[in-house]
Length: 242
Image (cartoon, rainbow, N blue to C red; front, side, top):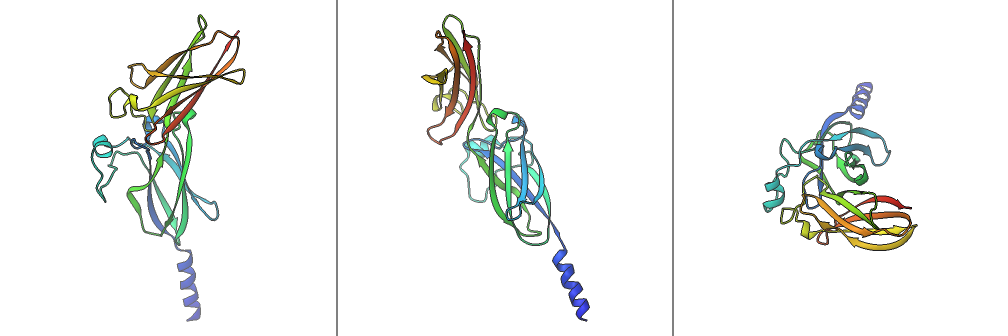
């Protein structure tokens, strides 16, 4: 009898139950982040031991614009639909565990790559699906470029989007007039001025002409900033005047 009870207890201690997890990433003041910007890498690990339990990719669409950006959110209202970007994991858990959900991305825009994480207790068999666990990722995607200086000037350009890849336009849902885009210029490692980049009228596109008559090695740190949310994105370009 004692052996039977012992075997039963041992069997209970090592049995594991499949537990389904959904993980999503949503840009601050924007939509879900997925395939359109190269996807997001997801890692699930035990907080105490560091053991990696599962990993994969967050892929899919950005979600319903009207639901996410134009309709007041009601308590309990789902944000995601079947096409919304997400990672679905299946964990084998024998006991409740405190897990860390880590994300890295967007992988299609390596200059804007970020990392974020959140922890949550997960109980065997108690699935976290639907919207799942949502990590909010701040920032902008900024892609900076410049052409060879001519006649003592250089043109700086920046393509700026929300983290989901959503477009910025004049008067649009993401209004170009609401954002500050500026270049912080250095020559030979020393500050050489700050220059705002104006919206060109082309979706996502900002540009400025800056003085570049003096010889030296130039670096321009171009940032996009939303004073309402604190969203910030940065990229760098360099050029030389000889």
